[in-house]
Image (cartoon, rainbow, N blue to C red):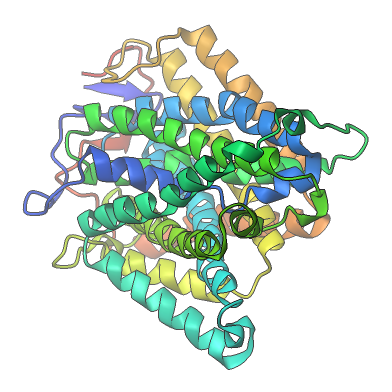
Length: 472
């Protein structure tokens, strides 16, 4: 038996995923595309980086930012996700390092940021179609379309994670191919000098950093599905590695083509501009393909995010942090109650504007990432000899230093948030701070049933400090 501070965790990585023996698990290829859609979904939405900072800084940002943020987050996810290969992911990491109270706070802010993020995708899907179907621009037809699309994609999640994974593969291929074609037809028109245009006196740093941050985060979301992955100790790090390459190339290559092939007009670089670029370079047929790819990409991001959010709730229920009914699976092995709660949150938040959604989810996500960095460093410092199937090849000091740049970035993103976004997000955090004691009171009074799954490793608070530095 080994312990994390005041927490015991027995046989890490050796337990069977509860009640999943009869369901097919996710293999490496679908997992790559699930990560791709958790993080990216393609270059749709990166146009604002050119408008905010110009060509050179936009290209530089999507090359440098992954080293500051994406790679550290992906590495931490690989190490911690294989150390705790169960549903709940980062909730379990934080609970192990800091105790169940902070594990619950992690679960609350990350679930809420995920649901806020998911509220974007039905809206963006319809925005790409309204040029062809003007009635989808507003009013009752738009409301009906949002409801119908949300219900359809929610049903897809209900039918099984393996279905969602292979749908993500098909959607991913369909979304990436038109940019390969656009790159080929642009070759005669490319002028490399256009890539190096920069004006440091005309930069909207808030829009620029939020665009980079929004398009290159959420690598840890896949950890909440670790219990559904086939051989997660090997599959998860491999999938994260290939997904990282796919995401970075999926952003950088289209920007390189769009900037290099056409004269610069920064004001035109807004959401949906890639479809206009496609028309100018390849014709109407390529524009339609880009628009269809954008619409399909939003579907892929929706189903991937909902899978992560709903399995997180299931994992929290299996750890006794939420009422037992959240842990119930459908006949397809999916978390029915978690899916319904996540879908309800999406519908309630779909009225927010794009900018408000991005800013609010970034703010909440930053809180969760701070807890993850603390948990990662704490477990490395107190238990360096603990079993880690995948371990980042750096020592304790290196682990601390690796977390410094992304932490500084978090502080910058938080500092640039508007007062409205900051106040709303802080209210959401306070709700989580009081919700956990409230649920404990409900459990004590036995108004709802809470339980820890007997199939999971033993994670509980002990009454003494541990001096053992290994976890067996």
